[in-house]
Image (cartoon, rainbow, N blue to C red; front, top):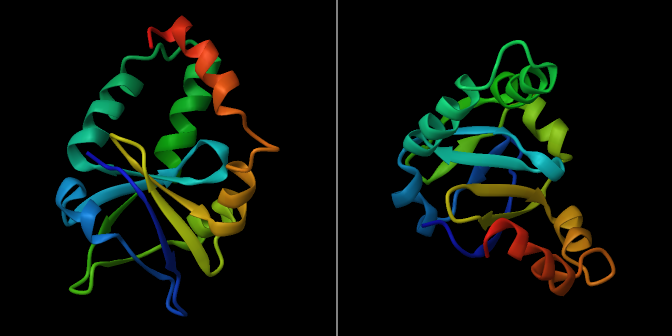
Length: 143
């Protein structure tokens, strides 16, 4: 299970350390893709296969389904950890998420997310998001 929040920096060679606590769950090879909210999503191969199966089941005749599938599939890349636990983030993914140097890598149960540190700070500020308001609407989703 992927949990927690970790601060890491992208080096001059576009390498980013993946938190050691995430490496067992993600494995040495995993998928990084564009995520929602202008962050990057990281999926283990097995979680990606589960997500991919859901994408495959969407009707090709539905325009929103095609857009949704293209968004995740076209942005996806397979990454492999080096001996120091780093990956190289491709330019198109760094650009999409606005990643330059300082990042926050968070666990989101079945996936990890990579955020630009400033964007994460703004996103999680009390001025931007009210967890209490969101929680009150979660009953509609069965929580």
